[in-house]
Image (cartoon, rainbow, N blue to C red; front, side):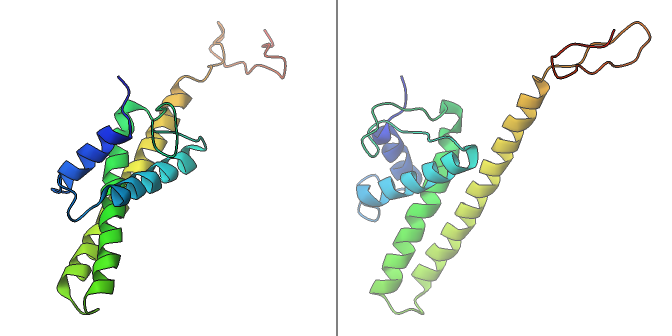
Amino acid sequence: MATNLADLESRLAVSLMDTLHRMYPITVLDEGIRKALNEYSTLHATAFSLQNLDGAGATTLPPLHEEIILIGAAGFAVQARAIAEADAFNQAARLPADLAGWSEKQITIFKAVLLNTFEQDRIQDLHHAPVPPWDSTNTWHMPDEKGETDF
């Protein structure tokens, strides 16, 4: 069964230790998921969707990459909380600074994992590229524009 928005919301709330949504309302979790999914889609130059997020009818995000989205979503959700806490408290308060620092590190990790995964996917695609034939003289013959070799 494909993952939907409610599944990722629940997993994100557990990872943030806020299953009752006292510190991270569903709207904040959804925005974190949305931002992470948008960055993922931008990098891949494909619009990936998550069922029930912004009216999407189906999930097109590869299941193996859900964890990447959760890493980014956690960072973006905590970043939103840090901003809200900074507005509510004195700018010198320790909690907003700690939250901002953690969220910044989390988003950095997310972007690094995202780029690493993207590069691995590109390398894997290269492994499936056609290889020119090898002839009996042990030399390579590159196909011409029509895909034909010269032997």
